[in-house]
Image (cartoon, rainbow, N blue to C red; front, side, top):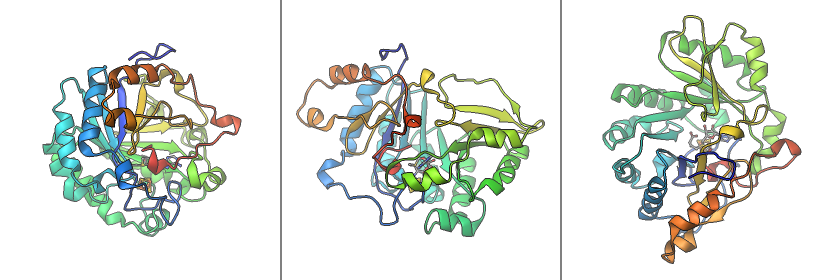
Length: 318
Ligand code: SAM
Ligand code: SF4
């Protein structure tokens, strides 16, 4: 699928639920988000049907996300079905890792290739604090298990939060010294209920790069990847910087998102969305509709103009 700016849209991110077993301060309000009615959430067969259509239209990379995807009942089955679709080259999941020890082997057996795990601190008290109740040990065991069963390469996603984890950046970077692991630092985005909290704590990727001059830039293998990668001089792993705010990567964006309630989002940082659920449930020609709506993908986001996204990140999937 080619959009109006000539970009090949071949990457679908599917949010399978907006529910989560954590309440990260930058993502969800403490009380959780407004509950969506059961009938509004796509059934697993509906998600599969849409995934199949997107793949038939040229999508070859799929990521399952959420909320927390591993809390969705039947997730392993869905992953098994999607992984059987002809044409998928890369099939991954983004998870907070809390349930990963339990599910890593099943995910691998179901045909998943890789896993990204969100981890913002290596300190158990701070982890409990930022996630409002999470247990760091569960995540570390999940990472271990993922590596053991070969869900590789494991990538860690670390959101940069001023006054919270800026003192731990070096420890994260040092994890790549002896381990073949990728750490990706993500700029904090002002989204949904947590917008004001996030605006106050923003740190740019550049501020980190200015501090760690020993990091050497490496050539991008995939131009559509939002991360710019670096390495320690003798490091085994890579250090990525995802800078949606300070350094837009819209020019090479290849993504489209499907939310758990059946909305298609052409841009993470735009309020525009298109509801596919009625067409899906009325048996309309979804291929035609999807091709048409990809044409409306915006050229770029305009967050820096003071516009903010109303949907919470947990209801988009990152
Ligand atoms: N629950 C899973 C997890 O945490 O990995 C998947 C969903 S979560 C919404 C996807 C990604 O979005 C996570 O890496 C999380 O850190 C990131 N995220 C959430 N809110 C964010 C924000 N305000 N700014 C930047 N990244 C954010
Ligand atoms: Fe849940 Fe992931 Fe949001 Fe944290 S970032 S509250 S784990 S959806």
